[in-house]
Length: 96
Image (cartoon, rainbow, N blue to C red; front, side, top):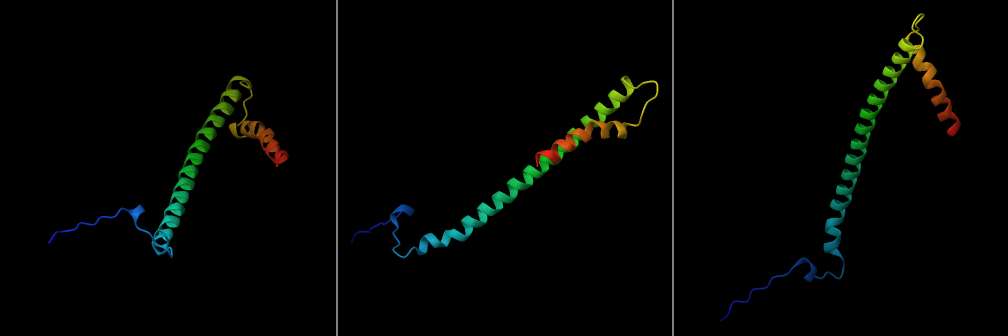
């Protein structure tokens, strides 16, 4: 008597009704959803970091302008930020 070894790969298994294919479908959609959530969280964290850097740069720019250009009188940095940010805010309003 001989011993017969039978091995199949995934591509060799045939399923007329699609049962094997449907087994993996819920997991595939769950993995795609989790990947989309992770991508959105990474983008959110990146945008927060960029916003922090832009805010620091804007404050530094406003303080530099205030100290160098308007040295004798001096105005608060918040007013200078408003003068710099208002045109950009108006641009955003008009763009939409």
